[in-house]
Length: 372
Image (cartoon, rainbow, N blue to C red; front, side):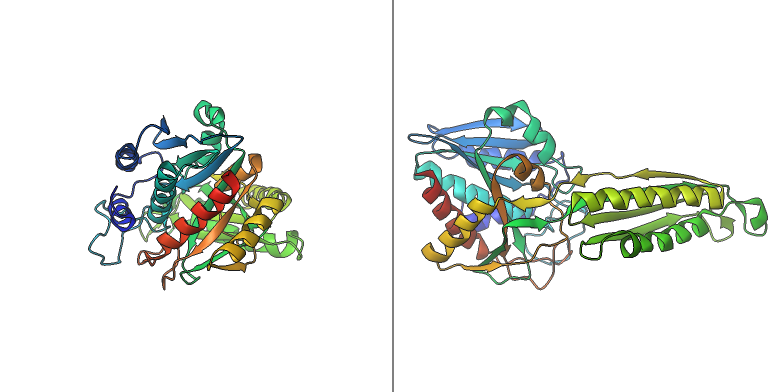
């Protein structure tokens, strides 16, 4: 097998969107098939993979999950191994995630433990969401883990640091798409139209009251409208407009309340502006909730058995579809410090590659502890 740095750089050059990860799947397969095969079984699921490393005397199955898709971002790092796919980039660290998973997998193929291991190479984390359907698939149901672990890179933490907490780590999230349709016309005759630019502006302003006046101040929620489109040219009143955004809440109850209020406000816009409003919530991700007992065991073990710094952090409004797996299987996710001056989903994100060895060390050590 190539070095982990070489693997990461290879993967970084071929980012693909959700359920289009054909080159990525082929690369992963070729790398895994180069390992000793006597203890390894592989299943494909769509553009993802499930890889089982058979234990010596198994009493349980330990799962390790990585996401494999990229983002629709044009890379601006200037790296010699920048993305070769136009308008695609591994701007959320999934190239790191996959490389770490391969490092852990390779270790246990060559250094067997008692328990079985299942490595989940999951597509479409960035959208439309691969964790929930993969979890329900026949392939994963047959190899269902008893525990499952994952990580996510964190640009704000230094290399050699991991961060996590028991309980809620990442928020409930939902995409938000709102389409407005009225009556367009000439700019000189506004009285003959229903202007959807004006309706969209009013809707955006009203959406800002949902959190401030409908959510318990001791709870938390965010509504962000990141994109507005409407109209065609400067002298035609817009017949259509579209808002695109995201909702994030720290509780499922708050998510329901936010959506209820958005729908009520949209109904009011329909009445007030004599238009049609359609709402699409797109991809919705369940909160990442780290199982208390095993998470505490992990924190205590890493502090005592390694030189890695463990920070017990606050929850974040980040979204991650790994939450669906933790909803069904005990386990945890943690932040891996990668020390980048640019954040997640930024075109110049450049994580420190020395963090790969840190993560492999952390996970091989803890999985060996749990699996023997």
